Length: 438
Image (cartoon, rainbow, N blue to C red; front, side, top):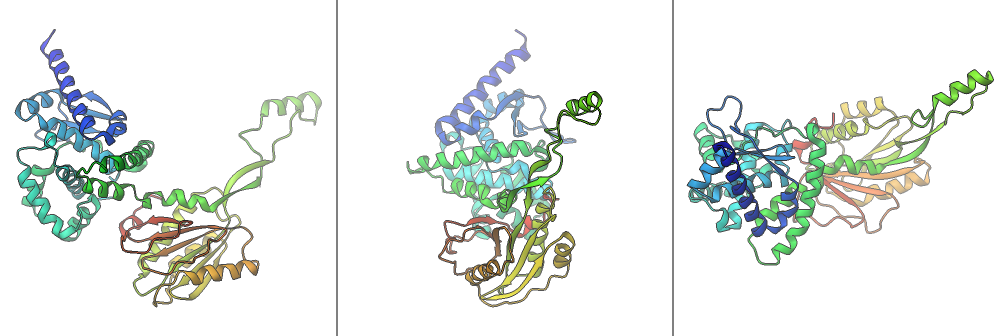
């Protein structure tokens, strides 16, 4: 057996031990571990980098450098399992899928810090390294500024305050573990992202039993909730405002042209099969968009929300073929109502947006107003109501007979709970400004 083959076999055993260490100590990650195959790959490093790293992932596989694995295991055995766990948590928190939307240097730092903060908070000896004392001091100081150490909060801190070159180096030395060379925008790996969304939901469920054992998982639980919160599903939730209608047209998918043309040739002007005229397609019909115009609402943010909504809807087949959208402004009472029936009207409304109101917030008046519109025959097929708000308010007690979605600018643990019959989505300003729906 040659040396390289022997080296590879030993490295595989070390990686298997690292995997088992995670599985035994953090059982809720079993499904995540099973979803990621391991592949040896020598000299893993960024293009142009002087030195290589030890592990990297593209969401489908974990790539590891056998030479790095053995060298690291001989120097500090816990570091292999620590790096393996670090990489796994990146995927569970969806960190690799945010590239293209966020500035990569800051996101690299922020996501590494978020993952390391979670690992250190669990304080498990199997994953503790020699230099962790310095990392803990940095995290303690940073937490005083950010409140919590989720990746997005650290990222926003960096955007606001910046960081010196010496600070970048210090953070890199203390928090960098795996290489991010395969991190890509979510559009390029949407299928992989969808798979990890399901895995993360499973982990979130399994972690409840783990927490009952009194383990230190507060940071992990918080980061997982932050990663899986519903703001990522705005596009999917908006689909609930679509309904299936009969669209009179030839259904090319089900029409057999061979029988049709054969009949025309054999019998003259008599086809053997008639084209299917009907095809079901999803079309946007009637719904209401309510804009909270209380004192804290800003015009640019409202415009960004409307643009995002438009970008999602405009991807739908036959968008605005026949539609009735009422855009309602309301603080503690309805201030304006604009009826939109086509593409040009929607774009013109957004371009010339002027907010009206700026009082306190009450969610109930728009629901009463919409009922009045229904009685007047303004809606043929009301699918639902989207309420965009960044403040507190009084919710209606009675459930309407259409879908309701509340879109918030931020997560607020002190805000009153939304009714059980309503959907909730969080759309922070940086997500509203992204181009991911274009």
